Image: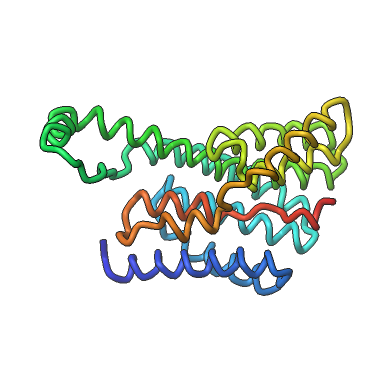
Length: 241
């Protein structure tokens, strides 16, 4: 990889992380500026790169925060399509196994290298569901703001299922999604509220903490995918309740 390309990737990470932090601190104008800058950089990434999906989704947040709901709706739809393309990208992503404690396990891994890498990739593909869930949730909120309640509820339910599949029942992002579904009322509202309350008693790491703790020191495909998933923003509770 060329040095300037690597630099763009590192800048994309920094911009995207600072934007999520700014949005969380109610500094919307700063977040919007940073997300737009990150999106400009992501345009140079290869087709199917999950960071392109992340930036499309984050730019859709910008349009929503600027009350351009139709534009935001189109962008979130494009982001979901980009996450699907990232699933194809993941089929060829470079993966490496962890260090093995015994020569036997090392030889076993070498002998079945292709099968082992396929198993690892399948694990990482589950992460894509978490990023796609963020975009689907945001799209659901926009649809509800556009008075398309049935379609919005459907997207929110889809997002919750995807997020739980990827990050588990105690994920803070999932908890947020369940609260949104509960707030909409309806026959399942009590169930969603109960699930959200249960999740709150055992919350796992939030996305930014995952990124901080699990980010590889090497600029490899695993890091690219983790950054895309963990740096895709989700509407804050204050913006829909």
